[in-house]
Image (cartoon, rainbow, N blue to C red; front, side, top):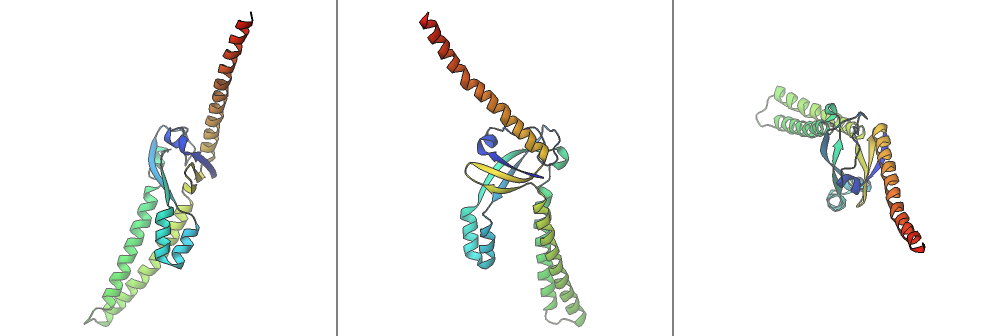
Length: 196
C-alpha cells in the first residue's frame, strides 16, 4: 500500500481519478467519507491527563470530506470497521458493568457471585481483544497521516490509484503549459504583423 498527498483543490473540484482507492480497480462509484486527524502527540497527552488531552484533541482536530472512488465491494470499507469498534467496546463495557452489578448484588448466592465475576472478567478480556483488533483494523484501512489547511496525506492507498492520480496531474500540467504558451505566441504574432 502507498501514501499519497491530495490537495484540497483536487478534493473540492472532484479531480480524483476513477480508480478505487482501496483495490486499484476502475470504478465510476464514489463514497463520501469524512477523514479526521489529530496530531499524534495528542494521544500521549490523553493518556497522561484526560481533560487537557480532550481539549487539545477538540481544538487541533482537522477533518475533510472526500468523494472517494471505491469499488462496489469496498463501499463499506470504513463503516464495518467503525461498527465493530463501537459496538464491540460498548458491548464489552455493558457486560463488565453487568458482571460487577451481578457480583455485588445483595442477597446473592455463591453461584450468582461466581457468574458475575466470571462475566466481568470475560468481558474485560473481550474488551482488550476488541481494542487490539480495532487498532489492527484502523492500521489496515485507508487513513489520514496528516491533514493541513492545504492538503491531506493518505496512507494505505492502492498503488494503481496513486499512479492514476499522478497521470492526471501530469496531463493537467501539460495542458496548463500549453495554455500558458499560447497567449505568448499570439502576442508575438501580433508584433510580427506590426513590423511588416
